[in-house]
Structures are given as C-alpha cells and as structure tokens.
Amino acid sequence: MVYGAVKEVIPYLIRRAQENSAVSGDMSREYKMYVDAMKLRKN
Image (cartoon, rainbow, N blue to C red):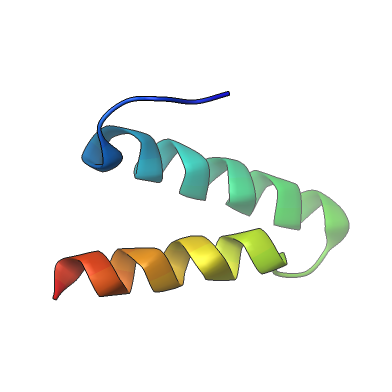
C-alpha cells in the first residue's frame, strides 16, 4: 500500500499503471482513473 502526499504518490501510481498496461497490451482502467484524477487536481 502506497501512502503519502498526493503530489508524491500519484506519479508512482501512474508509472505502475503504465507498467501494468504495457504487460497486458492495452490501457488499464486504473491508468485512466489516475489520469482523470491528475486532470481534476490541476484545475
């Protein structure tokens, strides 16, 4: 389980999602959720 400040853990979670989607061959649902969360936090 990852914990810490959002600015510190989101890049790690996005990287992990990208690694997982690379293995499966397509974009995972989790990766999309992280990207959407990043967009919301930027506003």
